[in-house]
Image (tube, rainbow, N blue to C red; front, side, top):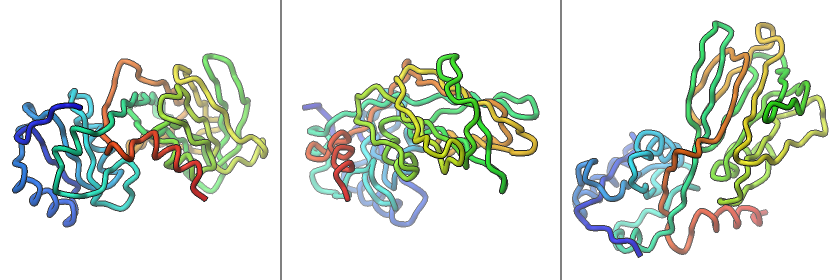
Length: 258
């Protein structure tokens, strides 16, 4: 059991009335530590705000404990003001390694961004995208004609990846999901499971005629010609989940949800 002191919690909230009201109530009860002195950061909102908090504060060495006051709460714990210290002391720790996206554009720009859930390529116009897929320097698919394609982490495998009929990956599986989005050719290709240390490169065919955007969580790059995705093993982010409902258990439960 970890030790967390009452005066060492930093509360941050999404920009909604519901989340801000919850933050004020929690601060009245537990105080609000300076960021550089906090032992744990409590993020109040939905999954989108949790991702935003992880991107901004997740690499400062403090775990983040989410409290659900948003729309989607897969990465969040139930909102309950009483017993917060005890819940965090007994919470399970999940460690995540983000993806790094490096995207080249038709204007010759190179843009990098991080993704905790997924990196996705999406067609920008009515015409389907044509994308070549290379893994560790070997071309595995000469041409995927599709609405898009994505690479998901285990933490993100239950998000957009699952909606695109991709596989759910257990935390700690050391795998990435490569999932097509509405594949037209080859029609029967359903994607692939890749080692977590794979380097995946997407090359866009006919980028002027068939423009494609790349999105790393919520960072979008328009008109890309080539996108490389790798796991950042040197970076680790930590999330706390209530002891009776850890992230691994949530992902396992999701696989048996009809």
